[in-house]
Structure formats: structure tokens, C-alpha cells
Image: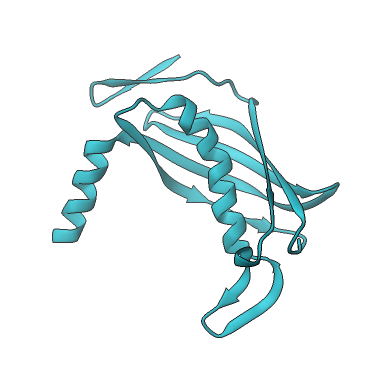
Length: 142
């Protein structure tokens, strides 16, 4: 299936239910620390969001062309359990859909062993790099 948008096509090489998986080890820079200091020495919700976005980007990397790039559109994080520095977290993203706006929607789950750490939904849109650059420049001037 191919979607056409603004005169170019997006290759649709994934089916609903296809998955991508990656592992990461929680590092000190991933813990809940703000300007006021460390809140808890556990994997921060904002770090989970970053890594959840990466899990969806794994699909984008296979779908985009050389002159295209992905850009995040949405993310949810249901942070259900802590993970600690040194823990290995396995993210599994599942392809949910691609809409006519070239937006790829994936769901994800993050586990530490058998324990669910987080789950949610994330979206990314594939656009021409030139269009992204023009959008950013317009916002800087505006």
C-alpha cells in the first residue's frame, strides 16, 4: 500500500501488528532529575517518553526516503512501575496504523524482565526535509 501526499508517495512496508524491539540499560542520565535535584533514582517518565519515541522511529527509519525525515506528533506514557540504574528495559513497538497524513501510529510496552514498566501510544509523521526546514524557519521568523 502506498499513500500519496503533496505529490510524493510513502512506502507502506508494515502491516498492522508488526513489531520492532530494542533494549536499553537505564543510565544515571535517565533518572528523574530536575534543576532542584534528583527526585528519585529511577527511570524517569520523560526518559521513557524519549525511548518510546525511538521505538516508533524504528518503523520510520525503514519507511522514509533519503530526502524525508520523521517528526514526532504525539506520545502517551502510562508509567506503571519503576526501573533502576543498571536495569535492562526491553521496548516493543507495534505498528497500529498509518493515516492519510503520513502519520505512523505505534503502541509500545516497556518491560524490565517480566515486569511492565510503561506502555502507551506514539505518533510520527514523515515529511520532506525541505518542508520541515521551511516550517521551522517560518516559526523562527514569526
